[in-house]
Length: 255
Image 1 (tube, rainbow, N blue to C red):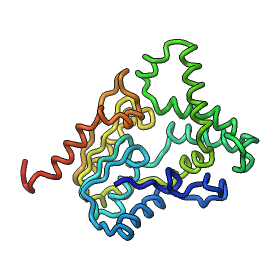
Image 2 (image 1 turned 135 degrees about the vertical axis):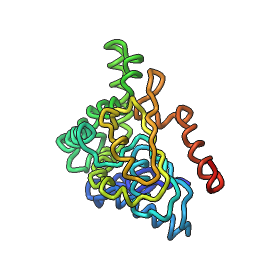
Image 3 (image 1 turned 120 degrees about the vertical axis):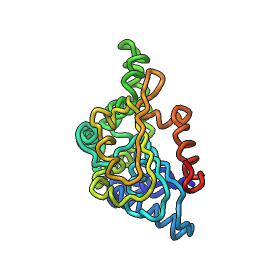
Image 4 (image 1 turned 45 degrees about the horizontal axis):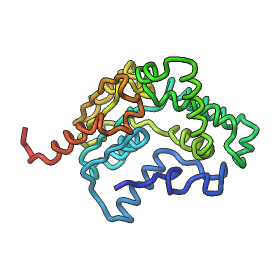
C-alpha cells in the first residue's frame, strides 16, 4: 500500500491553489495523517512492515516511535534517526532562501517557475547523487553544464511552493530522544556515497544501540551507484528487503 503524503503527489499541497497560504505542516503531521488513513479509514490496526525511502524512511522511524505496538518491523532507507543538521540543513536553507529572495516568487503567487528556484535546483540535484558517480560521468565543463541545464529543466516543471513546503516540513523531525520507545525490528539501510547522510557522522553506529532490536547496513557506493538516489534503483539494494521479510516470516524462535 502506498499513500501520497500531504504536500506531495495527489494529496493536498500548496500548488492546488492556496500557494504560500497553504497551512504549514511537519513530518509529525504527515505521519499522524498517514496513521489515521491506515487505522481509521482502512481499518488496519497492525502492520507487518514499513519500508520508507528518504523522507519515507524518516516517517518510518516516527511511525515506530509513535505507534510502537502497531508495526512489527521497519526498513528505513537513506535516512537517519536524528534531527536534520549540519550540511543537510544548510543546503535546505540555501534552496529555501533562493526561492523566497527571488522577486519572481512574489510571496508565492508566481505565474512561472521563479528563477531562484530554477537556479538553485542543480545544487539540490547534485546533493542527491554520489560523488564517485558524478566523478565518472562528469569529466569536463561541457558535461557539468549539461548536468546543470538538465536539472534546471526539471526544476522548471516543478512547483516551487510545493518544494519549499516539503523542505521546511522536516524542521520538526527528531526521533532520537524517543528511540527507546521503538519495539519494532529495525533494519536501517544507508549507502556510503549518500551525501545527505554522510557515513563520517557515524550516526547509525551511535543511535541504533538505543533500539532494542535494531541493526544497520551501510552499503558501499561506487561509480555505478547513485548516492542518495540509489534508493530509486531497488535492484541495487532489494536483497535487504528480502532478508528482512524472511526474518519476519520465520517461525518464532527459529535461528
